[in-house]
Length: 508
Image: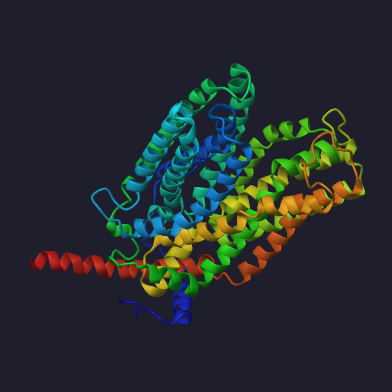
């Protein structure tokens, strides 16, 4: 393996300063290619959202028990985490006629589509003794298909563009499309689908729900395949030289790649904090009990759409100019400032004065902090994704191994394992103050204990997570200058490989 080019990183860093300002021959993408490829994440989010509501179908239509269904769904997350490295390895070993990534995008979509049709149209019709095992098998197949397609979201970015200034643009499209999708789906469910069928326990509701999302996800998957089509070729894979990846390499990558380790720490703690803070139980406690108006939560969810998109556009431009790492740090500090502001406002002020028909200081301050805080929190989470191809390229630069699938799925595995504890954290915390049998609801009386537990779950865990992220970023050295140096080196190696291939072709 030829890794002898500029092994002295200090010299390489001085080299990049010496050539600063010169035009670099990076692999760049057209903006529409980045935007189309970002649709892959929204395509899988559509299926994820459909399956988030499968418990209603499994209990209300199929007739399975709530405890059994909850156990299956919880356990599936562990299975999901273990499928990631295997599928990541499979991606890295793939290099056929249709590329490395497109087969997994199309295969994942088709597998999930078959599962949806079988699950929602046949599960309720199989013999009773077979309903549970049939559901488990289909759910497991869904997870495999879902991992096929989601793994490409993280790994495929490494071929779309190698320009450090272009990579954050992915987050602009991703955050915007995700925000629009989740705002639209709330309207679709609450104002159209559920009223049309009179509730969730309707077989016909899930027929329409599934078919609508199959078509919607199919359109987005097609756009994503088009976006990556011209880039899914060997000349864009690392240095252009094929390097075999083994399971032993997975451990070596995780053990020896410090930026990957730090990114996993930052992203997984952020994910844990966000899953706790946005849990429906915590939202009920914050809006329904502490503020006393649960309807305000729905109103603010709609209001946040446009600010989220604006913050995403502005924030990713900063990341493109100063580097993704710096953009992430700035978004994290902004999140800390906004959520500390909310904490002080609620604890020192009168949260019951927050209402859409009472536009005093408390309402204006809370709405502003909540909307901005959620916007910058979404931005910080979104900027993690374009940092994954950076650690992929760092691994290729350091060891010669181009392993985008393994890198992305190692990241996902640790992320899922840590973030799966969110419901446990909420359950134990609420049990500590007496909610051992049932969770608080909008009719639960306000107490100081509920206030402090709500602040801990909604703000406290996030603050711990962000502090951990900032500490991790101290040891994550892939700033803009370092990435420029790495991309220059990789381009030099790629030019040499292509030159050798061309010479060999001429000598034949």
